Length: 298
Image 1 (tube, rainbow, N blue to C red):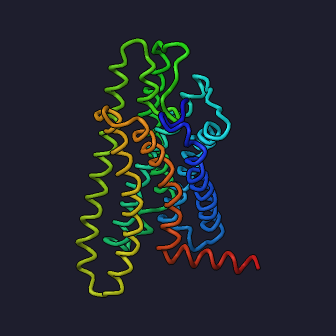
Image 2 (image 1 turned 180 degrees about the vertical axis):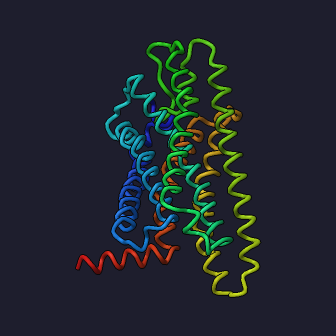
Image 3 (image 1 turned 30 degrees about the horizontal axis):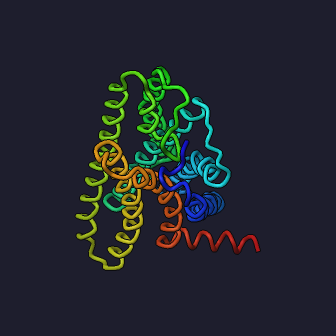
């Protein structure tokens, strides 16, 4: 792993915001999980999905940041093929899982706003668990062939991955044989997951918007917009940098390599750091739950 190509002389400076974002990710998501676990009033489908998102963010960020900081601080660039493929699998599988959880959260908001009287009867604990399991299985089914395919490719010896973590396209460039299948499969899965999940989220919010505009109470409309606004911020943080990173890597070869790598890094570092802050600041239930937990411990 080379770190950020062309900016090796700035690694120590770049590591500062990266380290801060990682610490915020650890503290924010861990606090969110502790508050949701400790406060029984937050044991609702929406907050269970939020817990899933927090766990995914912790795993995805931890799978790349310690090694990345090791490269920046200690020039620890060596990585074995198995470790590289494991890191690649975790990054891409958990990205697919996060996209699935965002769809589930959009469905949760749709049921809560458009069918509030049946909310708890539709999104029961077994249903929430089944959605979480389906999200996990989808990621495993989609990403496992990608890893196995790269493992079978002949890789050039003594090669360096021009990236700060084992990103699929960067690893694929090391193949000495034909990588057409792996490249096509990766693009197909990325396009399918991104477009299909985005379509489901857009459809959910179109129905939500129609229902919210029909609410007679201005206070109810404000509350619905506030809750949905938090979710939309997180969706934008996840999908926009992700899609930009993916398509720039494939189609904008004239773009400087350090821009591509920085964008890919920020795609994995910014959402996990900002997700708990957005929910903690914007959602009254989380703030009230944190106060109740703190008051009980005094």
